[in-house]
Each structure stands twice: as C-alpha cells, then as structure tokens.
Amino acid sequence: MTSFSNQECLTVRLSALGDAILTTGVLEHWRVRSGLTFRVLTRPALAPVFLNHPAVTGVITAEADDLRPLPWLKFCRRLARQLGHLPLVDLHGSLRTRLLRLLWPAKTRAYPKYSLSRRLFLATGHPLAAARLQRLNVPQRYSLALDPSPASTIELRPRIFLDEGEKSEARATLERLGLTRPVAIHPYATHPAKTPCPEVWKNLVQTLEARGEETVILGRNDHPLFPHAPRDLTNATNLRVTSAILSMSRALVTGDSGPMHLATAVDTPVIALFGPTTREWGFYPSGPRDVVYQSPCAKAPCSLHGQDACALGNACMRDISAQKLLELLDSLPG
Image (tube, rainbow, N blue to C red; front, side, top):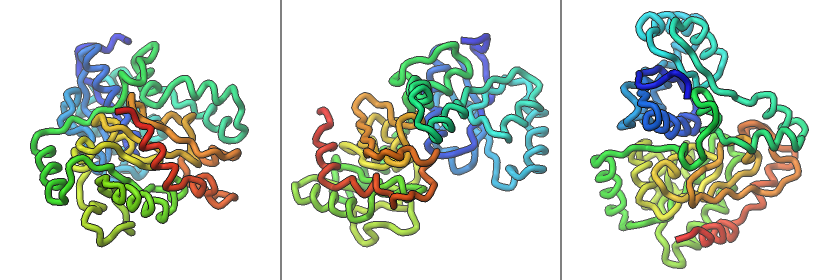
C-alpha cells in the first residue's frame, strides 16, 4: 500500500452502474487494510450504490449540466477549493477526471485502464493481449491505484450494504407476490446485443414455473417483457430494494449488466451470459458461486461494451436457449 493510510480521500467514478458497483469492494478493502475512508464523486443515479458503505463518509454528485466542458472546469475548480486537501483517487480515468487531477492540489492516484491492450485484443484477438487482460479483473485493476499488487478477486468482490428497512421492504414485496426464494430474471440490457431474445426469457420463466420454481422479473426498461404478469417488478423497485430482493433470491440469470454485479454484491449466485463482450474486459462477476457462460463466437468480442452492430445478427445470443439457461441454473452448487 502507498503512504495513504488512516485518512480520508476523495474518489471519483462517474459512470456506469456496473463500474460504480465494482468500486465498492475495493473501497472496503482499503478501509479494512489501511483505515482509509472516502468521499465519492459520482452521478446522482449512482449515489445509492454507496449508501451505508462503511468506507464512504459522503457522496458528492455531478449533474448532467456539470459535465459539459466549461461547467466541468468550474466544477473541478470549486471542488479543488473545497476538498483539495484530500488525496484524490481516480477510479474513472476519463478526460474529465484527468482534468480534475491536473487541478488537484493534493496527491492524486489513478488506476491502469489497459486501454491499449483492450483495443489490441478487440482489433486482433492477439493471445498476448488476452493474457494480459485475463490476469486481472476490473476491481483488481482499480486496486492498483493504491496497491503495488492486487488482492484476490474474492477479496475485492463488490459489496452492497443493506439496512433493515430495505430488507423489510423487499421481504414485504416478495410476500405480496407469494414468493419466498425465487429465481430472479433480469432480461434487459443497455445494449440489446448483450441479452438473449425475449422468447428465450419467456420460455425460461414458463419452464421454471412449470416445474414448481418461483420466478421474479427485475430491472428497468421502457418495454417490459411481462407487462401484466404479477411477478414482473420491471421499473417497480429502486436500486436498493432490487438489491435486497436479489439477496433473498436463489439465483439471478442475466446478461452482462449492472444487476449482475448487484447480485454478487449481496452474495447471490449469478448465471451471467456473455456474447459480444468477453471475460477479457474484466467485468465478469466474481462471487464464489457465480457462473459465467461465454457464448461461442469466432468474432467475439465485437465491441468494448456490446454496443456495436453485429454483422452476424447477434448470432452469439441467438444460440443461447432456455434449455441452456436451465442447465446452467441446475449446475449451481448448493
């Protein structure tokens, strides 16, 4: 560990949901190992990730208007005047946060993004780039901002710290639906190429319920897959209550998504489906019972975030059937 110890720092992670969740285990690791605490700079929508976190002393939010070039410069200067005595740990690594570091009076640290290796692997699939990327997942890369060598993936796995009110609300929601320990289904993705087609999810739910298993649908989407089903909680729960429901679920089945990390953060096993994105990006779930299924495709990965159009028509996700998902669920230990 660096000379940072037993002091408060400012850390920054401005997007996205999954990335913010992946910082939580690293912050807790630094608190336990070196007595560090943190004020967190993030976007308002991500602030709930850090509620009740024992390493977090406060959350500072940057609104969308603050992130435009000139307002961001003013925001950085104002923040430097207010909190510039604190060491700054940059867990974002964008042009915006580099500007913040340039203006910061105290010590600053940043993590290695492996940008060159990621782009080389995306462009060529070169095994040397793959090997470098596979050595460390994203939380381990974050930890290199302060640690000379990373802890294990299990030690750095994300953590959501729920309070009794959130657990009670989740329990009441499940009781109202007649559920005790459902299989949670998250059938959505920011980029549609990262999730199987709706028919696969519908077949999975029907098959699970036909064999007597409980299911609950979670997530946010403008077009819910099961709009009239009583056990569809799409858009019905906030991030904290969603996390609490996941903590009471038998497992979560999802594509590469933010809720995938929420489940790991509350110790619920995950079946995570990867197609256009791959483990090399480092965003895979890291719980001891998590299962990552990489759909075979010679062209994967085809984008950094799964956002690009696929020349094969998203064939990697088309090859995932409800039966495959059932097999993966049945493979979970315990």
